[in-house]
Length: 378
View 1: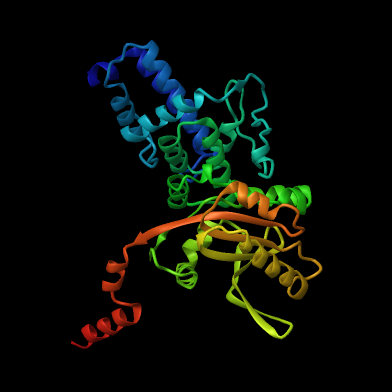
View 2 (view 1 turned 180 degrees about the vertical axis):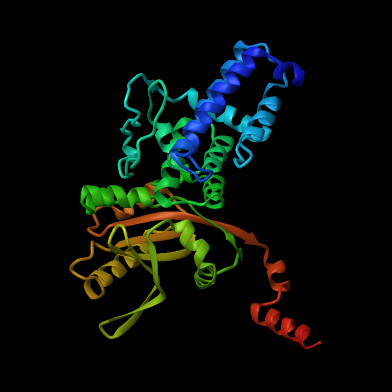
């Protein structure tokens, strides 16, 4: 079957045209990710689908195409059989959702989706035969090829695909981080915290703060017993600060734990204090290993007042308070923060629960280090 395809005149004429197109694109597109390469794959996927539908080249078509393209372009790694099937899948997926506008000029159309307004437009013009690609395809052109494949393999709904494309661009996620965010279901957690930001922050600041925070927060990188206290959670979060910051999201700068405040004749300590570089404000985080209670808000509000009065500079925006608890009743939370002047929010968190008997049987970090030292001396 493969030999029959390679001797087919229509196939060979099409292959010559395809090789010419790839050569023309080659000086612009390298193996590094860029919009030229993504659009090349889009067009190749389109042609593969069309040829499989219209031509009678048999089941060995993609195998033969892979052989021919690799012979012609040995320095390019994108023409393996596996990647050609991925290219086909990429085209079929996005062809359902993208609109091709028959307009000359080769500039990708601006995105009108509100969720992507903060993104910068592509700086280079992207030639697209036959028209312009809009919406999701413009986003696809701004992230690596394997990121694109990861998204369409794990996500099926257009709205979610657009979200993860946008977040990848905005946060410069690696593929490993992208996979983590998808697996942790970020789409359904982002912007879901219960807050009073609408009434306590300027519109833009409030919308941005709401968009950046989550509910629930996933701390699966932690293993704690059911009897763990707030101090245990706090200590573990700081021990895993890199993963903690990743879960919090871009812009959080760690300022300290048990942050000391001298108020009157008493000392108070905030569980965790952060500064958010995008919101330009301090963020107080209080941890509760129990279900939400209305009195928790009073303490959080007290700490926010103290930071505003004693730490905040005139150039800083209003301090935000975040209460993280094991579970909550949203109506009760909303009722508790209503009418307060400080921007406050409440989110749940979850972690890996370790039975207490197992936890007790495990060595402490100090005991583990002592045993390692003993082994080293032998």
